[in-house]
Image (cartoon, rainbow, N blue to C red; front, side, top):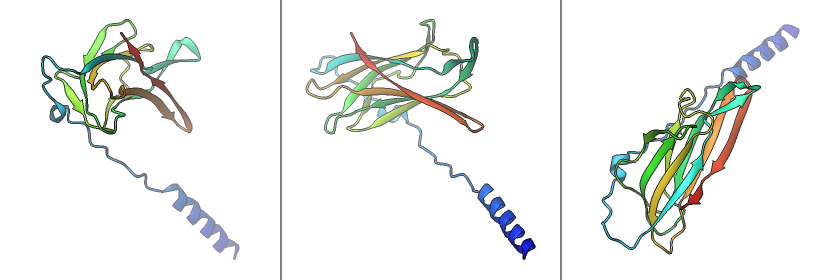
Length: 169
């Protein structure tokens, strides 16, 4: 009887450890499908947003850093109006432009979200990276929302935090 109980216990222990991880595949944004040519003169309001991100943070001292995956979220919070993005530039800690994510104006339909992912092993931005976004919207519509989630999981430890963009002139 003891052997049966031990065998059952070991079987259940092994069964619980071998759970298959579910992988969710999120379709990447096809930026080209979102391209749009804005009229040269229009009645849209133009705005800029600054978003700080932290793909690298200090750990233990200023001499050791820890890399994080960064998800930058561009959100149209309007239920009725489309917004247009004409700039999404990524800068490193020293203010040098690393990349421009938008080469032609794109649109976000009502309640649509577009994401930019800075992978965990991409440390070229450093500890003080940031984005500048330029957008256009109907004057009566809400401003778009720009957020970032920085996260990392190592062994049984997890770390995550968020930042939110601020409108600039």
